[in-house]
Length: 147
Picture 1: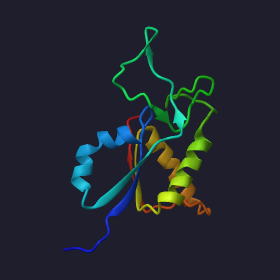
Picture 2 (picture 1 turned 45 degrees about the horizontal axis):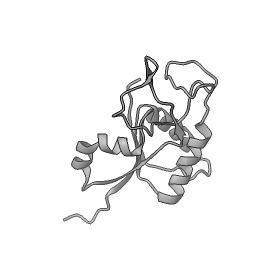
Picture 3 (picture 1 turned 180 degrees about the horizontal axis):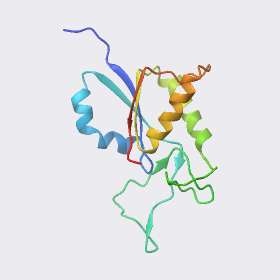
Picture 4 (picture 1 turned 135 degrees about the vertical axis):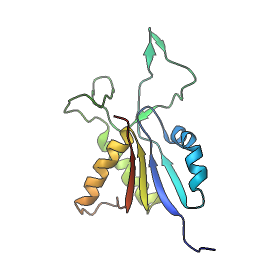
């Protein structure tokens, strides 16, 4: 029997998700790795406006606590990965959220991120690469992206 400690992995959700939804959607994955890793799911600080179709709120079964890591259009808190924009509304709040998570719940061996969270993770890799005194330190990342 091994005495190895399980890996501690921070999990960063995609746009229009939150930590709870991401955790639920990774159920099969969590079951496979539960003996090898502890997963910590966090939620972005920025609320995303509800989707609308024909003037009415979209599917009411969707989690209403939709979140994002930043917005590409600051005037309506909208994000589209294909937008060419200078806007990154909410990014600084998200960065502070990650820093606080590392201070309070770290250290983390690695980070797993999906969609917009994966794009955010690529920026966290850049921050770590620069060797600043940031508490954001990890040994590996797993980027899952659909852009």
